[in-house]
Image (cartoon, rainbow, N blue to C red; front, top):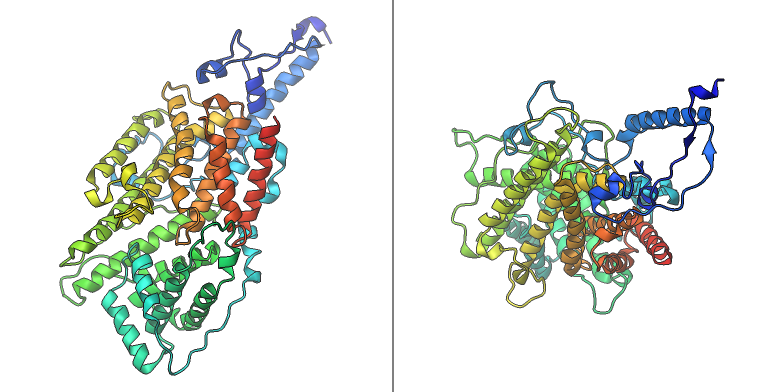
Length: 567
């Protein structure tokens, strides 16, 4: 081979930052382009004096090209990659839809937004830890089901409905999901008091209300570092007994699609979520949603249905949709493009004669629905966007529009639901609606995380867009992770419908912070990021007895933080 055909090249060496991030470095001096864009110090180690012959250089260049092709071909397998790797096919020459248009709200096909722990753990920045065995969430969750022992509940003719449990159900469960008529439940209670429980939907619903009242009555005791003492408490055994009795009646409900049946399956899902059993809960929400498919979604003029019944149908439909979608996105229960983020077109109608004390509850319910709609628009737009094709609105231009929509949502909240920090303390005095504000604040953080996620992932992967706003959005994504942990801290040790989802989202935020550090971007982290991660570790220690995915994630975070401190 003619050596002159391949002029000798000196092997180049990436800067320290690019090497830690496992990204290609262009070796510009005194700072590479990547470090210049991120506005961080670029440091080169002393260059290796060895050289390759000309043929080797040519081979390496070919391998670089092949590697790029392989990466681009498999980018869809790298969960959580930036938006160019996960897209929805759109007709060629079609303009991007307006950011608030129904086209974004009711798309025919959309892919899953992989914003979850398993996606983060699959990032190349964690490749050296060989975490493949930790990526099967469903295996972790299902492996813990067989350990659950369900105590029987003795149903006798003199069975008495415990009034305090029913009151707690109305106070701690129904207030966040107003899908029942309180008067109806009271009627079911009176019937059971005089006639005993039957094998019908009404008795099933009453038993589920009692089970939820019992499980919500048990909360963290001061100084407790584990939920084990609560997990084995008499109150939770009683709750499981009520639920087991309700389960015996659910088989009858499978052949019906009425309003009460949908309410029963939904409440069963809420109970299973409070017991940190998300896969079983998702199945219940799916069944509840299936019951709702038989409801007429348009008001008829023949007055065949009462206004109250139509209002309840709208409410349960929306509530089942939100709950099923939250878990579907988190559990990743499908591996194709059959994901549907389409939601009902209507808003539930407030009941007539709404009492003043219930106005905030109904506003909360509608505000939560509005945030779910906004989050779906964000997800659909981000994954319809194609950076390689001309678009009327670029991704970087779209995010300020979504930020504005979030600000407008905040401006429409009534004073009772104001999300200012002073009004958002869960355990503060005279804070009647603090829990409602706490939930809305958490959903708002979800929306901001979705907005900034593509930029944050691209930052860590070393593929950040060239737009000047992109580093700013990535930085906002890091700040959102910190805010999520701090704002959720007040609910770290409370058992409720969203406990498992809160554990997941805060753990994900902690892992993202660690990923930023491992990518060599620690200059972008706030000073208190390690303390935020340690707060999540303490939370995971508390819930480690509840489901097997919790101790698994606890072990991972503890290992990562130990490794971080040794660096």
